[in-house]
Amino acid sequence: MFRYVPLMLKNALRNRRRSTLTILSIAASLCLLGVMFALYRGLFLAPPKPGQELRLVARHKVSMTQPLPVSYEARIRQLPGVREAMVWQWFGGVYKDARDRRNFFARFCIEPDKLFRVRPELEMPDEQKRAFERLRTGAVASSDLAERMGWKIGERIFLTGDIYPVNPELTLVGIFKDPNTNETLFFSYFYLRELLGAGPRGDMVGTFQIQAENAEAVPRLAKAIDTMFENSTAPTKTETEQAFALQFVSFLGNIKLYLMIICAAVTFTILLVSANTMAMSVRERVREIGILKTLGYTPGAILFMILGEAGVIALMGGALGLLLASGMTAALRQGPTFVGAMRTLSITPDVGALSLALAFLIGVGSSLIPAWNAARTSILEALRDSG
Image (cartoon, rainbow, N blue to C red):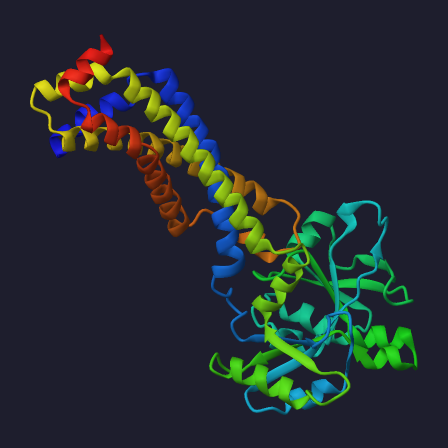
C-alpha cells in the first residue's frame, strides 16, 4: 500500500483552489476546536498547580454568600494533619472609578502572619513580609497587578466598601509572585475588624484556607472538617482549592455541556466540508478510476488512495488550525480573566494529538461513502459514465 502514497499526495492537491479552500475551512474549524479542547483540559483535567495540591477551602455548605463563625479557625487548626489555617475573606469594594473595568481586581482580607505558611509558593522578600505583619494598614499585591497599575512600594491605596460599610486606607508594603494568583491584593483581616468595630459582622467570615501536611491528609481533612460542623448552625463544605475555583466557573452555567455542544457543531462542520470536497473530487475522476482499474489497481488500492487523500487534506487543515489555536490561546493568556485556568491556557501535546487525530478520522470518515462507491464501480461503468 505504501507505493500508492506519492500518487495519493499528488491527487490531494490536484485542484489547488478547492483543496486550499477546504484546508482553510478545516483550519478555521480546528482552531476553534483546539481552543475548546484546551479550555476543557485546563478547567477539568489539568493537575493542581504547585502549592494547590495541599490546600483546602472551607465555606458554608449552603452557599459561598453565607458566613461562617471566625471561631471555626481555631478548631480546624487542632485537627491532625493540618499544618496551618487562616481567614480568607473576599472584601470586594471599589478602587477609584467602578465604571472603569481596568480598576477591577481581587481584594481579600487575610491574616498576615499566616499567609506565607498557608501559601508557601508566594515569593516576596523577607523584609516586605515583616513589614506586612507589622503594619496594620499594610497591603501586598501580586506582581502582575502592581505592574498593570504602576504601583510601587509605599503606594497609598484607597478602597470604598460595598459589601462592608468601611473604606480601608492601605499602604503597599510588598509585591509578591505567585503562580496561582492573578491580579490580587491582600490586606489584614484584623484591620477590617478594627474598622467594623464591635458587632456580629466582625466575627463572621466567608471562607477559610487550610494547608495540609501532606497529600494523603487532604481527603481525610475535608471529611473531618465537614463532620465536625455538620450539626452546627453553619455547616461547612470543604474542598480542594482547585475544586473551589471551579465554583466560580459554574456561575456561567454548565460549561461542560456548552463546550461539548460547540465541539459537536465544529466536528459536524468539518465533516460536511470534507465530505463535499471528496464527493466532488471522486465525481470528477470516474474515468480516471476506470483507467486505474484497467492498469491493475485493485478496489482496495483505490479505496486506500481516496481515503488517504481526504486524510492528508484534513491533516494539513488540522496542523494549520493548531498553529492558529496556539496564537489564540497565547492572546487569551494575556487578557483579563477571573478564571485561573485561562492564565495557563495552551495547546498541550495531548490536545494537539487529539485534535489532529480527530481531524484525520473525520476526513477519512467523510470520504468513506464516495470512496467505497468508487472502488465498487466496474471498469465498463466508469468509462461509460465519464464519456
